[in-house]
Length: 100
Length: 200
Image: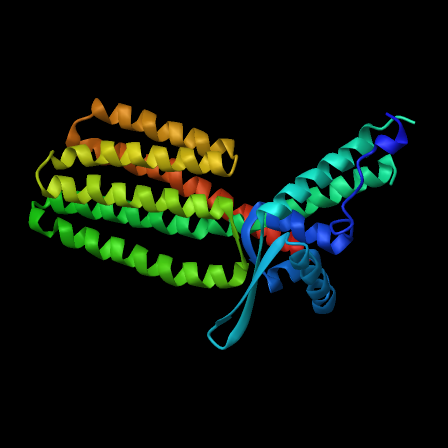
């Protein structure tokens, strides 16, 4: 396969934290902000920025609510996000299969 | 990006997905408690049949099922709060357990109470439903041991047909211990091992 035929990697997903968020959300129905933070092992600020970018791209939806007096932010992946993640995996595969 | 980097990305994605699997491990407590409730309920029922206090059987079930329900609600809320995520496996598990719980109630209490069949059939029908539940959970968690426990329940149900109804409990209790309590304890040890690994 010529190098120019390699599938481009989605720049929205191509970041460690955003890729981690989508990898987790693809396997759960929904996840809280704290769960994502602890599972990925990142900071509040970094995760907030990553979630905002994914939401802007329409890949995830974020719901903000209150559980008792505590704020609860939950995220879930959208259809567009699922499709983008699947295409990202296909693109990664093309890099693995590529023979120089 | 080169091949090595792409490989690393795949490993990273797999690692993240694997971390979400840990959420399901805490389900052992529900499994164990409902097993104990069923053993005590069946044991109590047979004891009441033995002393010919048939009219108290419903009270026996209401007490044990009530304890199970209260525990499930309280513990379920606590776990939900701690987990912070809902996996599809957890959703499927709760639906399977709820559906089989209703079936247990119908075949173990309501139908015999309505005199659709004799009390002696309860252990056979409960074993059938337990087989469906345990086998389905084995499929959801991709755990072969649990699937075999499901098969064991069905074989036990078949075996009970050839045993006099007064002695079916003798087969039912070991079935419960091997096909239900044992996998719950294995789940518990897996969960504890995982927690220790996470802590270290």
